[in-house]
Image 1 (cartoon, rainbow, N blue to C red):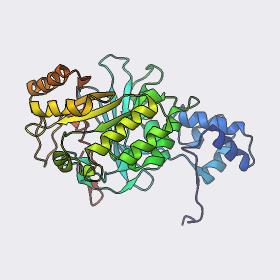
Image 2: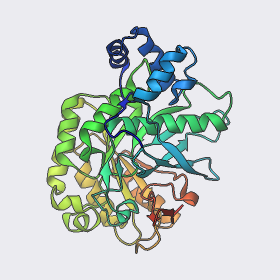
Image 3: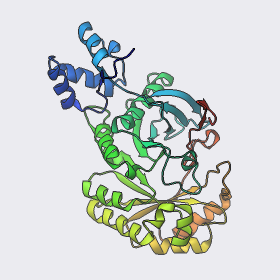
Image 4: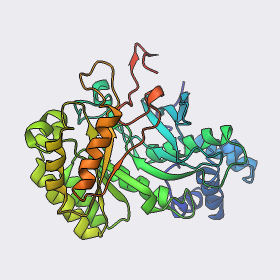
Length: 365
């Protein structure tokens, strides 16, 4: 029977200095920490027995006293466009979905990784699948980092001799509201950005929020070079209250003030995401109101034709309708793009992530 007091030390999430200090604390040379750091963050390795440049005695000792909790991939689905969706499980059996999106159709394409930050989501936007599965808990910083390592490990199995740094963009746009798990998200960014490890530049990292104003203001004061994306989806408080319940706490006026504060503090553009819902927010007057709200800001607008979710009443607009809405914004002088969606055939696109279980069995995958 396992000893409940024998709690192993979690090494995942430690930077190089912390790993060196840990090895010294157990009577080992500090450089062993540097070796372990390389195995974890460059080689995506969780097993001490695979760390072949460590002495056998040390590997055995670490196996009994420490752990590297890279999440397991339970299931994987691959879209016809090359998008990969992973169902990952953590040590407490909680599960999230993580998505790898190819940046082109070229053979040597690199990937953008869409990370989850919570198991489920407490925001519960009306058109999104994630909130319907309920909220269970926030991820720890090392669990978020583990999504990166697990995804890279799976990808390396499929793409042999690929380019260095196959995953070179990170978007916090998966399950959960990142700014409601603020400390863990910021800590994970530092681990992902560390040039001695995963080494993904801050300018290649995007945090997407449904409008957590206090979190936006905190992020502005961090002075990081990450991109902020705000899920807007409506041009009136009346409609946004229905679509994004967080708007009842932080209405549009306070949200736009927070966005402007972020711009002034960081000098960086803010991206506003706007899901196009047929007959709900895609009329000409909606485009005009959107232009009125966002013209004063240093902003980009990312239009996302809705990805339909079984059981929800919202519908995807026609391609012509989406193109027309995009053109209306361009005519208003706004910097707007119309997103090409990836992974819709495997329910891996924006707003479609959820991992549903009943009596321990997977019911939605």
